[in-house]
Length: 86
Image (cartoon, rainbow, N blue to C red; front, side, top):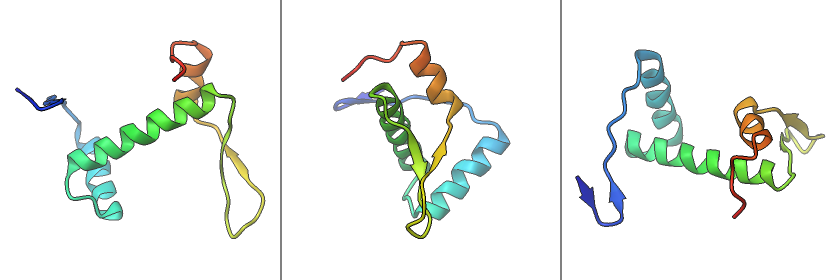
């Protein structure tokens, strides 16, 4: 079933993944699991674009020095050069 510019997709998640999605929904205040997944896809997309453009991803706590975060899934994608620049 397609609606507007979107498409409904059915995905199977095991119990552990469902617990993570439910926890994320509660922590983020998202209205639905779909919203959590859309947000996660947006972050994943942004992360891959940043790596592709040569940026590193990091964290800052209390204004202190940045600690680089190594995301194996992102590095794997960038190293394979399978991600188009946009």
